[in-house]
Figure 1 (spheres, rainbow, N blue to C red):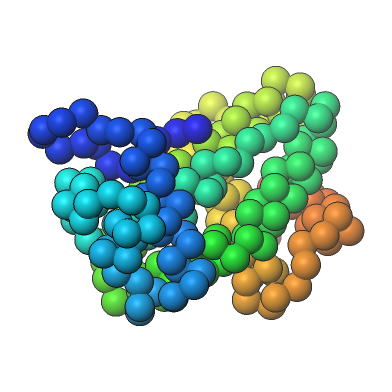
Figure 2 (cartoon, helix red, strand yellow):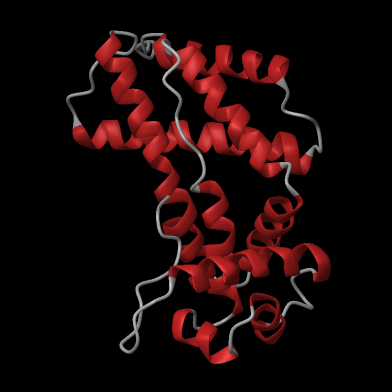
Length: 211
């Protein structure tokens, strides 16, 4: 699993066990108390560490909660199931299952809501969650291209834009389905969504009509 905490500051070596305990305590506190009542002192007490231990790792609650949520999404793995469709369905089902967990639901909705007033928090969400999970798109596309399911994209800039768009479509659809509409992203929905996505990925672009 990727490290979801910022680089350690000067001083004693970081304790992976303390990091794990702190992030787990943060998620538990979010579920029980909500964003507004969560405090670093409460997290420290739950994790069994000194409050100063938290401040050596995170500058405040915003950073801590984002990293606690990001650690959940680092659990995502792209399965190799033999086809692009099956791989997409596998990872989307994983994503939906994580979003169904109370700690993921509470944490993600809290930081997104708070980020509407905090540009630094928005940037941390982008770097700690969005950019890290784009690895799934890049890995899946490379695998599909190697199988001959998708054409190569020699233009690096265009390939990067396509990866961004794929991530936005997948993440946006699943988050809206599970957290906004509060509907289940079950196997039937995931299969239908995957077919729609595949049509967009495999249909050659058409030239706009000339006037």
